[in-house]
Amino acid sequence: MLSRSILSSVTKLQQRHQVLQASLAPIGATTSSFFSSQSKPSRRKSINSSISTQPTDPVRLSKRMSELGICSRREAAKILKDTTDAKDLTLCDQAIYLRGEPVTAGTGVKVPYDEQMIEIRSADDLASNTADDATSANFVSYDKLPWEKIQHDTIVLHKPVGYVSGQEEHQHVPAVRLLTPLNYYDDEDSYKSDEAILNKSGFNFTRKKWDGFDIDKSSVPKHIKKQLGVTKSDNSNKDVVKEERTLSGYAPAGRLDIDSTGLLIFTRAGIMARQLIAPDTKIPKEYIVQVQPARQPTAREISQGLHSLPPPTSNLEPLLRGGRVLHNDTKPLKPLKAKWLNSNTLKLVLHEGKKRQIRRMCREILGLHVVSLVRTSIGPVFLGTLPEGKWRPLRETEVRKLFNWDNKRVRR
Image (cartoon, rainbow, N blue to C red; front, side, top):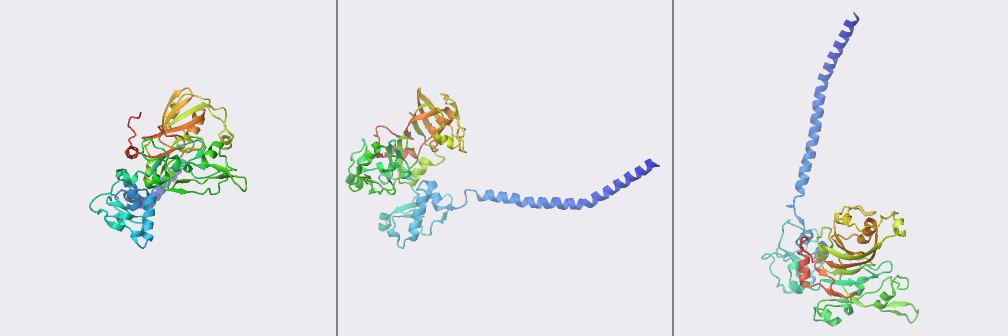
């Protein structure tokens, strides 16, 4: 009797389970269809988002001009703003023309992604109305412009130790202070360092004030003070810096720290700066570095959390491979070229330029301290016989090669 009652109970439970499953089936189907219907828009949205990023969409005029190599985005935006604000177009220094018509609708103007008929017209063209019709010809990229139009846009300086490449800060002297008529040097050029001749040749010099700079409180070495023409004030007996006329409108394209020397390029063409320092640039920079074994971390390194250095090594494989991450950095180093010239001198070729990168990777990866660092070349531009503290304009062959640089070319 007990076994029959158990069997009967099991049978009843099975029947109830079947009834429960039948009642839940519509709910399951509804739930399944609900989630499937919710997932479809998500997939559709993903497809639409991928379509919206296709290169067929219109782009900002300034972006397209940068892609074509006409000028940088910032330069294009400035011209567009100036022409929009101006009441008379002929009063502008420059104007952007799209298919033969001036663009005066501001910086938000968009053009087809493959637009070619864009040009910048100068003040002379605007006043005389003699510019070529932009509808009859495509633009001319920067490196294809007539040399006389761009020959003074970019110069190179042999920066000495003791100067910073950027702005006046922490009582340091910026390298731009060396761009004076007296420091002009070019053994291939006919005109000498005479300011009147240089002005006629396309260079413009202005006198810059030393705003907030106190030579007495600065860490400027004596030899730098002598180069700056420091004299004693008649009234206060303090050191006074002579305000020399320096090149106007040029900015450094890259950096070279205060303890390093060698090539430093200045330019007034944004498209040239982008070519040299963009994250994806293929232009190599070559350095000659003298090293010695590093003894221990500096006080600055310790304050930043670096408490130990590796033992000194001559193995350059970690640099050649790349992939290492320097202390407090997030991005790994790119592979580079490196070889020993002698027991304490390295030759390095880099395609990137993180702050104090060479000094840091020598200490953190090789256990070596950098004694001296000289940048000897940037792509086709070589230090050559340019004396320390002197500058010269880039030559035509150098400018053309910078814009057509092939990373696989055979170097010297």
